[in-house]
Each structure stands twice: as C-alpha cells, then as structure tokens.
Image 1 (cartoon, rainbow, N blue to C red):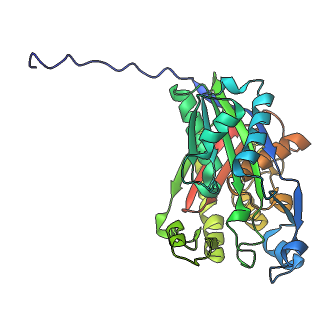
Image 2 (tube, rainbow, N blue to C red; image 1 turned 180 degrees about the horizontal axis):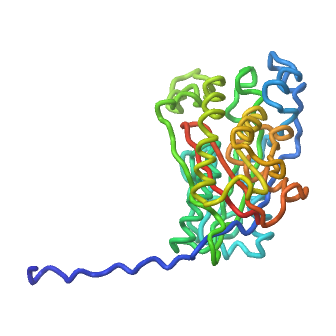
Image 3 (cartoon, rainbow, N blue to C red; image 1 turned 30 degrees about the horizontal axis):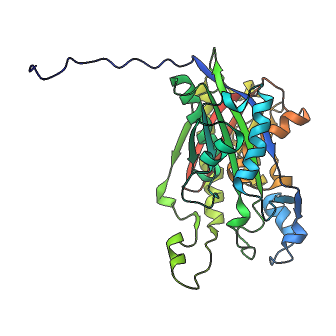
Length: 339
C-alpha cells in the first residue's frame, strides 16, 4: 500500500427490519360504470360474447379530467389514514403504472407532492399488470434492508387512454382504477420472498402498436394496445401456476395455509384455471373482481384485496397468495399476510 492510498474503510451494514408487512390497503374506482352493452355500441360484439370470453360484466371509466395521479392520490390518502399514519411518515412512494402520460417526471414524484409526503423518495414501476406485485417485492426489500421504514405503494392505470374502442381483442377487457397499500416494518416476515421474471422473447405479445416517436410524423394515429389474446391466455394458464407454486414454496407454506388467492384480474377463465391447477382447498377465497371492474392492470390486485376485506370475504390477518402477470411478459408472485 502506497503512502497516498487511504486505509480500506468499512461500509456500515444496513440497519433494516427483520420483516415487512402490509399495514393497510385502500382503493379508488371512478364513478362512471360502463356496461358491456355500452362497449358494444362501438365494438362489434355482444354482452353474451364478452361474458363468455372473459367473465366481465362492467368496468369503470375515469372522468375526462381525472388523471392517473388524481386516482392514485385518493387511494393513497385512504391507505395512509387506515394505517394510522400521516403522509409525513412515508419514506418512499412507488407507483406501479404504464399509463402516466409523461415520460418525465414520474407520477410518483407528483404524488409525493400532492399527498404532502415531501421529501419521500419517488419511483414509477413499469411492469404493466405485474407492476403491483413487483412493487410489493421492492417495498418489502426496501424495508428489510433499511432504505425505507414505510413505503406507500400505489397501483394505478387509466387504461382507457391506451385501448382502441373498436379492437375486439382489447376494448372490452380493461377498466380504470387505483389501489394502494402501506408497507412497513415487522418483527417477523409477513411478506414472503418474491418470485419474479420476464420473457422478452414475447415482447410483442402485449404492446403498443406504435412508438411515441412515430407521433412526430404528421397524421400518425395515437398509439393503442395490441394483444395476442390466445398466446397470452395460454401463457397465463400454463406458465403462471408453477410460478405461484414457487411463491408458496419460497414462503414455506402450502395452499392449505391460505385464506385467499388474489391473482391479477385479467380474465375469469384464467383465474379459474389457475385456482384449479393450484388445487386450492374450498376454504380459500378466490378474488374475481374482474367481473365488475374488468382488468385494471397494476391496480387490479389491491382493488380486489380491498374488496375481499371490506366485504368480509377474506379475514384480516389471513395469508393470501398474490400473482401479477402481463406485458413484457413480466410476472411476480408472493405470499402476504392480509392487513
């Protein structure tokens, strides 16, 4: 060691928590209810066909002036209140969304300001319909590592901005909404390890039909979603059950230990197929929020969780298996204790 080289300094180890847990959950749904019949005023389809194909009966639509941040703010403030905290107690805000209409700055940074949580860290999570489950994994790791004591995670999407109302593959599937959880310290693990991944070889299976850069050309239509429905259906049905089982195994629990199964609300047929493949016991409540609220992308899991708890269909303190999957093709799953 030369005279100019400083002695090797040691970096202090992280001072995190033994575990992390979901302290509260809340959701927000726009006031406007859109039936299948209304969708079919533009779409060449029928109420019966939509129900048979997806299980969807209705969905919510955001008001014209109701943004992703507007919806997220309402869910966020209620989740913070239910956790018995104030916005000043929040150390970091994660917003899972793919429909914030600004490339920069993030929706999370504006949400931090709107709820009064400045100077909390702010980050958007762009993992589409898997975004909320990705966010649970990130928030749990942040709390356990000590980079944050309390994390607000919001899943919110305004899917009406991305769908072509005449596209039979997507127009009837999606709705708008927001859900939020507060994740904080726990003396023991109450959020299991996150099992996650992606398959970029199927990058185009669920995607925008054109780049934002294409809008530089005069007369170019606004981008909308495209989905290879049958391919995505097969992938979700046959590939996601093993990932959900891995999450159970990683948490050291079995399906018998669960109180609820809360998958991404993509399609009722997919949900039923996953529940069957996992051989869930009869006592396990399976979330089927998709029927009334359709696919709300990153918001679907927390909206469904909030509804199960609010109606008493699932017990506070029970174990729930979460799994999100979507564009990318991204997926993430974990076992959590319900707040």
